[in-house]
Amino acid sequence: MQTNKKVNELVLWHEFDGPGDISINVLEKICKMYSERNYIKINPVAKNIYEITAYFRGDKRGNEAPDMAFLPSDFVIFANTGRFSEIPDNIFKDLISENSLKTMNFSGKQYGLPVIGGNHLVLYYNKDIFPSGLLEWKELKQKVDELQKKKIIPVSLDICQLYWILPILSAFDAWPVKGCDPGNINYLALKDAFRFIDTMMKQGIVGTFDASTEMLEKFFDGKIGAIIAGEWSYGYIMRNLGEKAGVCAIPAINGRKCTSTTSTLGLVYVEQSLQSEYRDELLGFGKFLLSEECQMMWLNEVDRIPLNVNISQKIKNSASQNKRIVLEEMYASHPLLITETSKNLWPVMELGKELFWQRCLGIDETIEKMKEKVQLLNAG
Image (cartoon, rainbow, N blue to C red; front, side, top):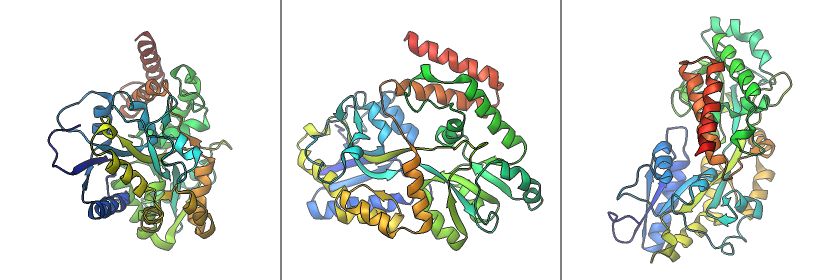
């Protein structure tokens, strides 16, 4: 537990950032509501995802520490180094499904409480530029000259973030979603995937911008025809683009579907906080997050996908066409598997992405560096 917080205050770290991630509005409101009703302050603190990762890996420990964190489900792989409290499995089982609970279960123990679902990628498009969306990447080759004359970038994604290129890797079987084991990486397929992205960029079909800021701004200004972006940006995009906004699956590559990963966002109790004198308040806040009152706020105010079992059915019955597509793509996505071996997989894939993006090595050399990384991890 941290030593520099105020008495009767519980600190909650989260990684909602950028104007496109308006989920912060609901989280802050929920924290305020719980604080006012329970005479203990929940203090939400925004942290860069890399800061949070470094802390939970044990790289940057200090006096500052949260009591809780609201994070993507794959962060439960840091349960040991982050000293997460195990959550009693009988407290929340009537509020969310067993399948949802499993998304934050690690090594047979419940280390997280899923609150909202989705967290997957789709293609948002401007109907003035692509009236019917896009089915295949090859369609863009026929339109690129016309769009370039209008100074419009056909499609953008954020290559600086590994998550954004996973769907493309999946179309080449270059992402080992079934095992999350570095030994399962199909390096030949990975080369093909990197070459595909490289070609799309050189031909001017694909641009890359920061997904939280510049990419959205250019999309709203009509300077980008379509963007690969997260389900979490749905509400912000609909509010800014209005009737011009369309949603579809990420375009296929020669008939092969580009499949996103999907996960949940939820609550973890950090530094064994459930062993503190605030155990009841901490568990009470978890129940509050899953209450129908709060779950409807996620749905109605920021268009997120709540996990309360009573709310889930209401979404299916009332969703707009665009929202239905977002839901369909969530069900078609690969669940983000959380295993002990996946902790080694991410650094390997991050290395490959970074070397590819920086262009400091050719694709063949990049693959060799990834193989060397796997050997080092296996040796360690």
